[in-house]
Amino acid sequence: MRSLREILRTVETKATQTFKMTAAKQLAQVLLHSLSEDCYWSPLSDPLPEFMNKEYQSYVSNLLCRRPELYTEENVYCPQDNVEEALLLLLISESMANRDAVISRAPDQQDDRAVSLQDASAVYDLLSITLGRRGQYVMLSECLERAMKFAFDEFHLWYQLALSMVACGKSAYAVSVLKECAKLRPTDPTVPLLAAKVCIGSLHWLEEGEHFAKMVIDLGEDAGESLAKGYLALGLTYSLQATDAILKGTQDELNKKALQTLERARDLAPEDHQIILYLSLQLALVRQISDAIDHLQEALQLCKDDMNSLHLLALLFSAQKHYQHALDVINMAVAEYPESFSLLFTKVKLEWIHKGPEEALITCRRMLQMWQMVYNVSQHSGSEKCSSVTETPVIKRHNGLHLTLPDAHDTDSGSQRASSLAASRLEQAMSEITMQSSTMKQGPMQLWTILEQIWLQAAELFMEQQHLKEAGFCIQEAASLFPTSHAVLYMRGRFAEMKGNLEEAKQLYDEALTVNPAGVEIMNSLGLVLSRLGRRELAQKVLRDAIRIQSTSHIAWNSLGEVLQAQGKNEAAIECFLTALDLESTSPVIPFTVIPREL
Image (cartoon, rainbow, N blue to C red; front, side, top):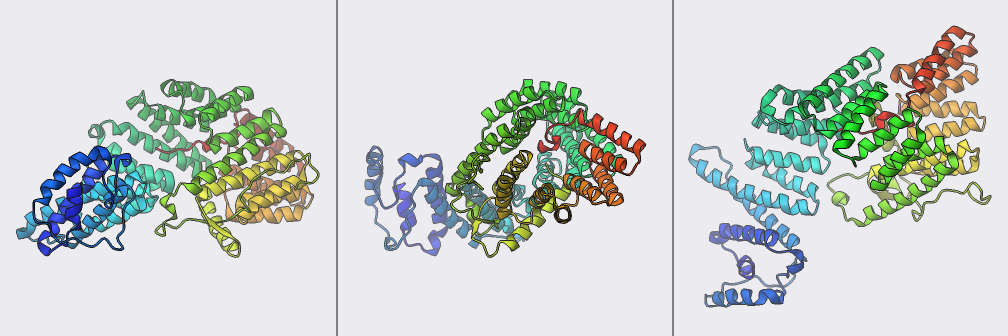
């Protein structure tokens, strides 16, 4: 190490540039593969005692040679650990490789081009290892973008770039790069499978996801073990499209295709617990509860501690009205995954129904404490997401971020649809504009959205207990985070309705519906308020729209029955009440769509 470091400190000439790049790569390899962080010593200090003898013998032999001229040590940067030094060396090597790159396609330069590509690829592979250790994927993607001038018809560099973009959240760019990778290797099933994963997950590009999944399936037996995953991806795409569909006929057709495709995936991979889980979820979505439980038991036998499987089992028990069994399962899941807010929200709903709002509020208080802990960890993690390269959402800072629920007994106290994705992006932009005069804080958007949901859940529980002062406090806290959120506007509408301000409630529901036009809960509340205001024809239309969007909503069917009954249409009202009763018998405490459908 001392010899390589001294070589790199020598004043370079044009003749030694290539040699120095090789030395830098070799030293980086030694630092990464042969030296732990505990054994590291900086370039300006002496080695640890156990290394002194070996290093000294090598160093003495080098002293017999004529010493070259070295750079001075004034105002130099000194790395603090082996990864930092390796990264510095590799960035220098990358700069040299880019400067001396041979990119001409002329036949007489083919050999030089191959050598240049080989040197550059070695540097970028080492950069991937080094930056991956520190989670610096944004920086890695920037480095690999610079490598694209070497990358004509070079699958490896294209695929590395795609993986780095997936890792740092540049999903749309990643899909574009994966399309190029698929052209370079049309018989490799992992490329379209990864593209389908990104499309189905963070982007919600379902048509593109369907296209990539079919690319895997079209490979047939050549896809090998990936064929079952291809059918899984296609089945999830159909399932998500069914959730997004508005017409009931389209929903039924897509749900049927999803079920058939997932069954085909299960036939190809009968031991894959993930495939069986999503087959069970699809059965649950079409309200075949008993069949869903049977399949889910198979998935749990294969993977007993899978979080989504345990969560779905709790929801299925709640759909059968076995609330104590559901609570037992959710408590077991929370013990295994204590930081899962999705599980905790389900626990709150179950406790509310089975034990009452007072018990559920205790869990809400614990959720606030959990959020505080997760927030503190995220603040001290030193994540690269604070980089100027990526835009992070701007959020209003809470005073001191000391979060507590008001005590109602203290008198001094105060899975997603496409349309909901669009709504969340719209309200984020609107909230940022609204909060420009406030104290700002950068942070992960998902974390602040969870905090908003906790406050609104607590507000709902306080309203159930008729504690309006405490409910108002919680709504105000949520509104301080996202003033134009459809969830906040909806809860403010319910609060106004509870206080008897029907016109104000209607206006707030209208605003919430503007942000999230497919909000079934919002439409249901708006319909009932319109009915109370005497506008029953409009109320009926709003509720029918809600049912068209979500035909399994027993609450919307029941509300429509109430409006029809108020209009004197008793026969139609009875049909609605019977439908609501039938749907309620298989309805979980939280929609099954809360289980993420992703590869």
